[in-house]
Amino acid sequence: MQVIINISDGQKRDSRVTMESGNKINNVSYKTKNGHNVDRFRGVKGSLETNLNALTKDCSLEELSAKLVDGDPEIDLELFGK
Image (cartoon, rainbow, N blue to C red; front, side, top):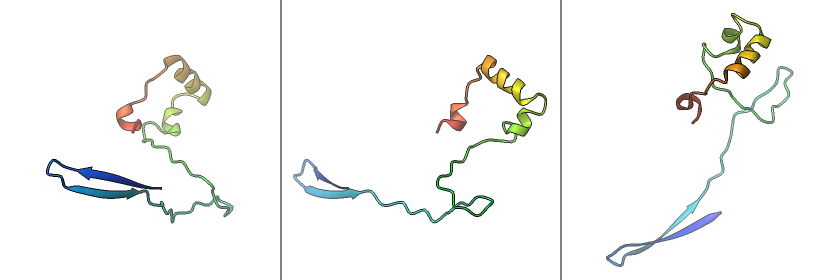
């Protein structure tokens, strides 16, 4: 969709600016192990300290789940909220 913006200043100079969004072209395609195309892909940002192997090193997955529910840890919005 094209948007036209009229701009003027105190010296009575006028201008028209046209603004429109471009189409994003994605040349990257993802495939499964079987070679099928992936419809959507969402990457999750993490680190070595927060990946599942590191979190379950000292406890089981069930214990980790209970700790997350009971402890109610806050997410660091400076790292992950943008």
